Image 1 (cartoon, one colour):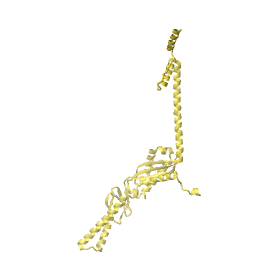
Image 2 (tube, helix red, strand yellow):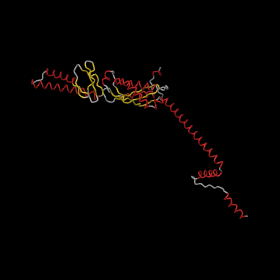
Image 3 (spheres, one colour):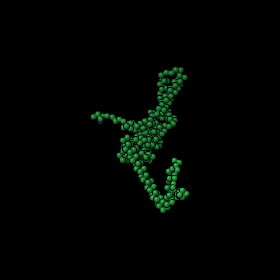
Image 4 (tube, one colour):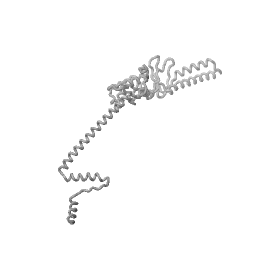
Length: 314
């Protein structure tokens, strides 16, 4: 029971932590700048209208009573609900009585209080979504962890609002599903070496599905392919054996070529004794030239001198 309840440790835990870390790069649903701009503008507009109404009441009656304050607050609320502002990168999807009315922004636009409703503030900048396929089997039944990043943008805010509930999560899940499907149809060697083709296939598959939601996929990039540690050792041994096999084949080819050339040389030397003698002298010279040695070679010319000396002595 203790072994079953024990949590995974070591390399497997680190692999899982690295696989989920890619999601930390995801673009947040709500940015702080976008979230603060609209409330600040509405509050500023409310205060301006309230001060204007109270100032007008004071100038006309000489005092500011409860009715002037109430009228100022009411007009301020109506003004903040009527005058809206969208950032340069935003589009606002406006619904009127529950039906689609228009897409407004960027800049200042107007809505009818209690009738118009901003259903979506669509950010049209390039978004980043990190996704992964954890322990996914390849076509040759090898489990791998693959990390990838997806760059996309909203080109049709109306579809992003009406056709899908949460396009952020929908894009992430569609990308993860497409990645698992692509890995399952490839062998491990193809996943590791054909990243460009895999990127293009994923981009086409995700873009085909997300286009109905008003999403355009810019690019998909495979970030990392993680293979289990025990399988890495086996693959390294296999690669070493393959390289050693290639080296032995090359060495055998070289030896065969050398034997063929030696056979041709022996045929030539067997027909020409002088060439064979010159070759021997050349080999002797090559053997002693680096050591500055001297070669003494007997010849008939030297024997003639020795014969003359022996005749004089006799």
